[in-house]
Length: 185
Length: 185
DNA sequence: CGTCGAATTGATGTCATTCAACTACAGTGG
DNA sequence: CCACTGTAGTTGAATGACATCAATTCGACG
Image (cartoon, rainbow over all chains, first blue to last red; front, side, top):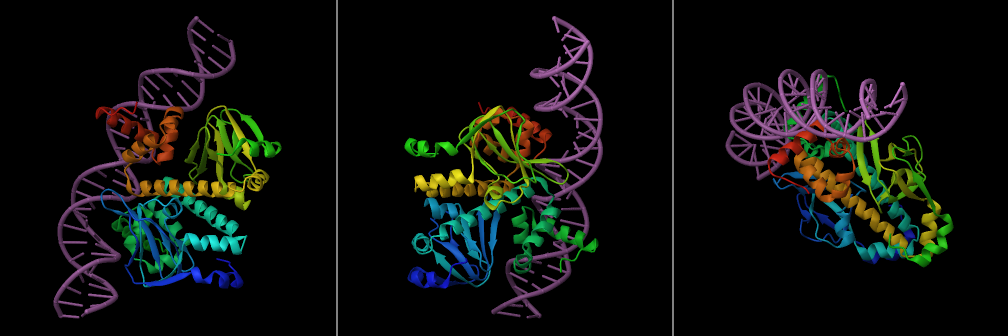
């Protein structure tokens, strides 16, 4: 996160790091999300359920990513989303207190945090743009371009969920691409 | 924006307010977005073009809303999006300097701004969730529930664009709803 | 091995798109 | 004031993209 070591030492006491097992839940809809999770190792995923019970994946988070329901953390409202681990993982729990400490110790932190927020928004806008305008195939190609690592580490049906299509459709899309001599790696 | 009058007076000089005509462009892809637009009157719209030249509407902004390509403002990068006015409008131009002044004069401003960012993210997440999981009909119903005013003031084909469907499809959806005795107003 | 979930494949269905025709209406110029 | 034009909206028929359902196959793991 670009935080220097001296600052880290000062606030160290308030940092909690935990290990989580594959498939372990870190957040459930209805609960208030108390932490922002910084992924030290492994993969987390943030998803919601629609009324048909289908999972819609909003975000994958691999090493050095932040995952959380920012709304729930920030507004202290019950979350509508779920977070779980797709691999055994190590995550750092960043709570309100931590954020405040950090802001006190390194004044530039607030700006960095703001920057992260802006980046997040940029991301979301791009994704909406794609969902509005692009075919499933194009969205898939965009995905593997942006997240080649994720693509190799999560099951295919989850990628389908992220893209907003069924696993069957994604399978067919991949078959198509193979025919066209497309090789992502 | 919840800024008190005294603060307003202090920073007044750096506030620029302009009138724009219907259809006037405020931002073009390729340009750097220098301002965040606060809509005092009228409606603005933020949209992108896909490679087929189709407009994808990311946001409508009516009275008291903020519209901008936050990324472009913040990172000072050329924007990928367009902003124009759907009605004759009056908008306040908020630039970097303004934001800084405000942060200096009212220390709580930074927090308010952060809150706006979080709200924005909440919004975008919800929209993605809908785009991933919900039918066109459900998305339309959601839309008129969230933005009844917008729905009355912008042409139907733009709403279709916002929802990610064609104008024809939206027309049919409305016909369906009418048959089911659905009356939004 | 045998089991279970993931992935593929085929047959069929559904929703939304596309293309085209037509209506309604607002704005423009004669 | 009326004809002319262009844009929005509606409707129909045909097409296409993706979903659904069902049947295998594949592959990891006990």
